[in-house]
Image (cartoon, rainbow, N blue to C red; front, top):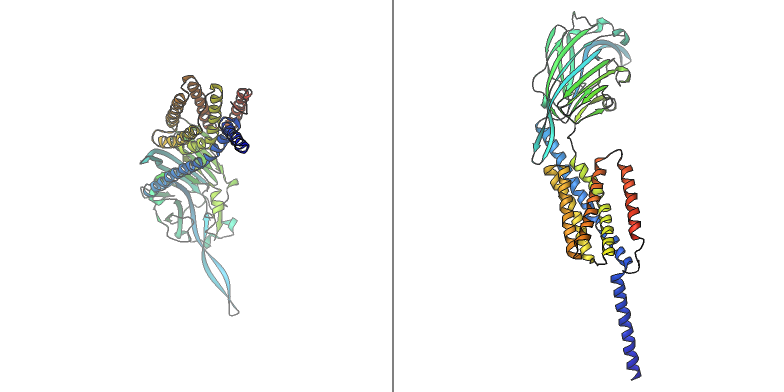
Length: 458
């Protein structure tokens, strides 16, 4: 009999201990915080997947850019002109122990003494579905003069073959050439043709054959017009002893790229105007040389002499959406902490599953931001996605707590968080400073509200 009584007492004690543990598990603040931390870490997975989706859409946009370049015309790089004059020289060859003199023909390459480019860009946005890219039409006026200095190359005038001279130049995408350029070269009018020589100076080269017999090689004037269309960029190669470039256009968000920035630039809402003046002291090419037909096409030297303008789209929505998503975990963490404090202050429990639902809403927020930004732009998309999420979460909390005041307070807190992230996204140079100060203030506020919390139970 005593044994049964003791058994019942032990079973009752075990049941009480089990119930006590379950009550502690439900009411422990520490357990709740551990769950919240685990949930935040779990939400890292969909956040990373979301960034992958943004990157995928960005790649799709880049594919559209390539497709437009393939059908309209790619970015244009204007190179040259270069005056090419063949000449004869004697070389000794030894065959079967016998020396023989052989005459070979090589080329002299002469860069312009003065070179001027002037381009007016008429740009527009070309749409493909929900994507858009920048395209343009332009007329590039090219003029200047050549000056030969054969004594520096130790070449005699009698070695030259002036009747076989060539004027060579290039644009990067010949598909964009709308008319066949006619070159005024001294007193001659020259027709251009493609250069199919594999050892030519330029890829996608153009050439015009000239006769320099009787020409004043001390100063040969030239001028021509390139009627082009292209997309995204218009660049130039610095080949003149003195190179002057003037580019104007109706694009309000240009980006000046390359090794040389404009000496003067004016950018307004209606367009831009930029001017460059460069001397040959920092140019990676000699003024004239012989025999080496790969000097200009040398990639390292070539890239060091390119400059121009890029027609950037006014807002890169994908870049801003990506930056916003990188703050996603911070927003979710601050939201959960605010919700936890609301739960503590109101003395009303919010079930763990409801935290999961709210976390899901915070993640879906970024898919809303991405999809709407493709349709209406980033700013309106941010407002729509933020308002929808704030209303959804606050109404859900009001229904859970049966009290509108905590829900209104939480909505205000969430709105402040989203406004804070929006300001950070808009800033560039001051983003780190403003973000650090704001986070410091947030931590201080959390310290203030958490100082009287019983960390064992409610």
